Length: 369
Image (tube, rainbow, N blue to C red; front, side, top):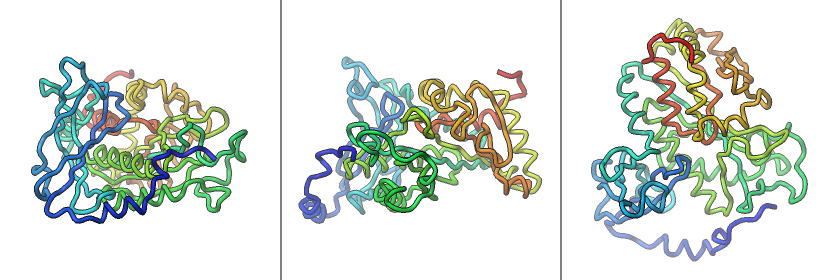
């Protein structure tokens, strides 16, 4: 079995003694932010005198950006701007988790702060009541980088029995999945489901429906909770789009999209119009669907393992090998939503939802990219 961290082997009984001590009226608030990689999360905690009632009760804070790939040491202070508050499933009520935007010394958005520009677009399209649901795939690894529960030498049986699988031979790490699910529900994250994926040790959870900027906020906090739960178990959750080379499925973050018009009667025509706009902007979207401008997705979008080719755009009803899938039920009812299957597992949900909203609702009819 893949190795686990030493920290996870510390006595949980001893920890529980301290965790059960009363804290009076004081409140622990854990600030969470995206670091300079655009993929990793950081956090730190402070004490407030009382439980905050809303995000407006959470003060701004700062951190050393030179230690998070976000600033030079000579001018390293960065601002943490609280934007959304959740309950803390690790230290429990009355304590809070707070997602923050990062601003530079001049109070302009940091380079990896995609939320600021995403929020502007979502405000522009708010009358369309755009809903998103994102399906986050991830893979469990030991701290040595070897897939969790895979044989130390060699490989498990080929793909087939693992998707939505049951039993010790088919499902690797379900305790982590179930604990993460409960943590999300407690926190107030809009998690709506989970399942084992096609590759062994690979899982998926779904967040949504969320409207506008809420989608990115809830998915980032769900990712934070996943990493924290995995930390307790001593394993690692990777969002690498192709963690294992060869005949194994990659990991995506399929994004479901629906506007008010798409949900109403005869909404299929608006879905088809949106898909045509997305076709014309395929290259643009590929560039923003992973943090490295398409390089990560190129390892995953090969046209094999339930993906489309990164170089081609396609759409179809119930087609999991297409860029855009129209669910069969939507095709029958002529209204609903569509699924963009191109975003990589390590995508920034703010960048993805911003691009989709802008292309589908704000871009004028322009020539193909």
